Image (tube, one colour):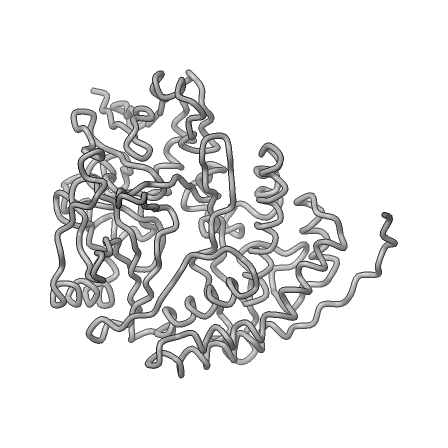
Length: 432
């Protein structure tokens, strides 16, 4: 028997998912949705049309809404008595608040967004919040999807929880269709990456100082749980206090790659694949997204970001318009380097994987593949490289007092990484 789930974008029915008895999942847009003025597509891989989108495309997109860790999915599968390897079945239970503007709900449930946008939230006590974050630091499957009326799902590998920030600074679990507003990522103290929260703070703040669009992050100590708090850029609020969901998807979803291929080395997308996707965008969005992606990619390489795969870049979709989403999940491997170890980019830079081997010709190749002129590409990399040491050191000073010492250690390591020299490209004459 075929099963169905409705997909809503910011409270508006966009279409329906159908899973056949054999497991194949397809998606078709609701006809009324496609006749709206400038409707937003669910994905660049699923353009607005009257046809049904295939299992290959839809399954990859659904998979991208769920956590990367199989252990988390298995825990959720046990909780809801469904297969951990069936994204459709999992999202029936945890799809009420997903990435972007997406809500995935059973076909017999209407999302009460119109009544709930002002904020229906169950407040967490300090003890409840501390206990929740502690579980995330001690168990790989400790992701809490919320209670029955406030379930959510996020992609990614690092343990995290999505919550709603109250006007008085408190935290709560949003109920029904009220959206989460922040993502909290506590760091485990028993690993070599125990300062990852500080690392991400320094890198993102530095990127912002260099002019890149970034997710806003803060560092907070919740009763011993040292946590990176990231404001969701896919949420907005009207003057009257009503919350909005802003649609986005990551590049892996946009290119219909399965989660198992998020790394280029595992058969996933590299820069040329991203370039092919971006070449399909309409002007003027294409030029803006290409430039923003090049800068984001270059920054990740320069800081030694070894986990900057296609899922860690996203696109904001609004009607026919497309923009690169603010940077998120940026962290440098430089503070953890062992003697003789080399930083390896998650996407190949021209001919090379290892950052220390990257030459000006490699950056020119990356730029040309994306449609940038050679000198423009080199100028962009040089501007970031020259500004990086000062930016990371300044970013460390923006950390709260109790985190500053650790932030300075991270910044020093990243600054050393950023001092890698880039040979200059011979200038071509510029014509006015």
